[in-house]
Image (cartoon, rainbow, N blue to C red; front, side):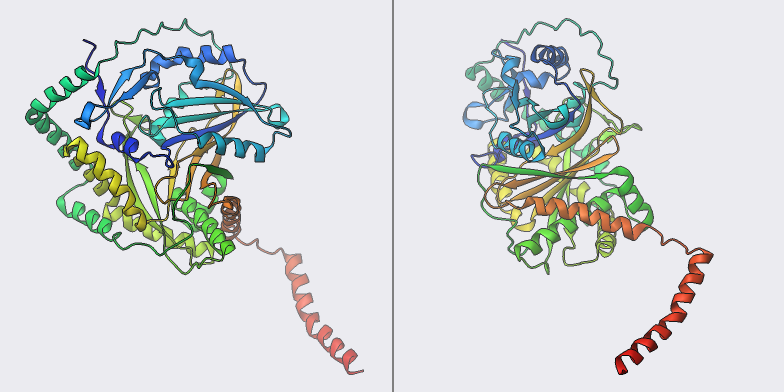
Length: 501
């Protein structure tokens, strides 16, 4: 009998259950590299040498008969790397519009559940001799933070190309039969009293780590309860189709820091403020009212991090995410006011421990019978979406250049999916001094996401101007100004006399 396979966590199972014909739950990224593109054999050899570091990339998800238990990860006996590493090219002229359309088309295709849940596309034909990589991975495989680190195993810190070790032969364990999976699940259920005690200890630890004292937890639950009231109807929400549009906006880390230092708030506050400016511009261009509440879900990582910012803890690659909910003040026209309102609000959310309370609830989700959990989460994924309009997720990335096979990655943009009735999502990824926004839109109902992107960039420009101190006039400037002010009445008098004549 093959070794006992790893079960998906309750949260990872929910990402599988959220997926349907129109909601494709994969995340992804676009990397743009200096040329020339590597040869296919060279790239495949590089990835094959790194795959032992990411074992999930050679495993598939198997359901338990009757859904009596959470699905399991098993080795794929038919794994072939050429299926996952693919190649394509842009039509002439190979610019940004062609690249954005390609990303939208590739992300519109659902990953095959019978294969390991990832793909990597190499894109040739970019202008200026560049090339790109587009990656897709199902959300049950990685979350936004660990996904960045998984991609990093394929990247190097130096342009020097070191010799690759001989790839380890792929010797998959025998795939368990349905009878064996069912038998193991029944055995787990028979052991459930002991396992529930162990799970309770783990959940208790998560509770303790997430909140300090019952009063703080109660404040968090109270904050979450305040989201029961649904938001107003908006063109941002409604039925979606299976096809996607994708676009991006760009900024720099220095610009965001300049705004933060000049106007206050955190790095994330500034990011949310410029997104607010973008959504205000989008709503106004559509003729929608901005006199409203625009609520966003903000996923946050609850992985511990060391001093260098790398995730610490278990290496199981399970998702470790929770969420906060923020209201974007699209009713305010002044970007500085928008920033101050967001800063005050986010400080209140942190004090209320909203994200911590949500994580505590997530840790308890493992107690629910898997069959009811999957059904409950599918229903819950529909109902709460009346309570928020969009999703914004901010993923910190490395602030130094990365290389693939000696080619420097010039830019990196993130992709997050749509689901349910959410028609637009925004992901933010920082890399090597850049802050890049990836905007996903439903193909039929969000054709104007470029308006949102331009609004984000314009919002940051306005905050930058507001954060800069006004230059002090020199002595010569002051004298010229006094002279000009003194002559102004004379010019007005002469004008009056001319008109009188």
